[in-house]
Image 1 (cartoon, helix red, strand yellow):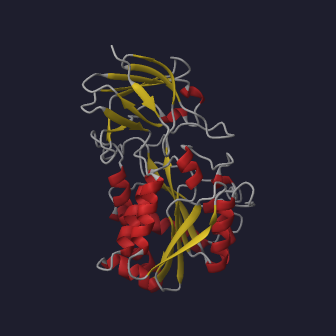
Image 2 (cartoon, rainbow, N blue to C red):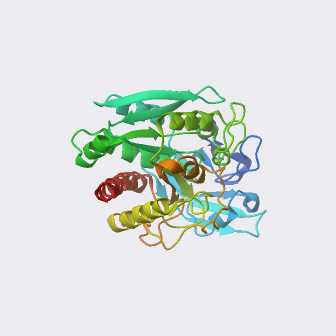
Image 3 (cartoon, rainbow, N blue to C red):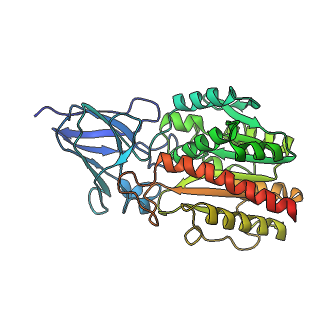
Length: 383
């Protein structure tokens, strides 16, 4: 039997082939550079048309979030456009924790990934397309350690400063799919919600704050192995130029509303995390966060408030994380900031056997969050 070929030598690729026997393979995920984090995988298999693949990814009890593997199904694509899900099983007792993926391709080449990838080429296409739209401005906030630009797309002429930023954790590719949906809505001159938001706000969108980690196939860190969402209190050019550049830009403009877009490995739902534990918390900030979540839940069936993270005790918020840091840093403006989490698994309240939580639903949620933001702003203006 002819053996399959496995490769991850491409943008966001990550896998190591430990052994290959016909159409079966033992694999391992490469940790982020200078880090112990690993969970993201993205690779291609060739030479298996019409034959069942059995791919075992081993050593996963030591991954960043082993609780994310039970109930998870791997993403698969034969054209790199549509990403579905395939039969996947988890055995924590086999070879240090093993995820077994089974799939019979109809094509000569098939791709597998932890979630539908969002490539740097697609990122550049998105930036180029959106910045050509009327009334859209572009600026580079700075450069990453690998020399990539930190792209920021801006639009609108209103007094309120709104910041939306994604992929602090590069393996959470659903965050940039969310951004694609949001940007296309905002840049569309015929979209009434986008028009009204641009009238009321100055919007700043950073589609990918960690392009180095994205290109390298990292789960959680940048080129230096640093978790950007633990750098906000004291970012540095040597460790976290991405956060430093974004925070400096925020200081120039101010922040009234901010949303940090993420994905969660374990919780099969969409939810928000807030800033309840910051030292200088004001009642109007708490009420603003509560009300935005209420509006989003009513408007968007994919959002819910029953599942989520534990709330930090008063005064114990972690100020190295962006959501807490911004609410505290811009407390005098009454800043409302939040972290949006989407699942790597399915959305259990509204499951999709074919795709699970998907790129398409992520983009749809981006548009839904903007609709909720407009309603929230109208309520705020009428108080």
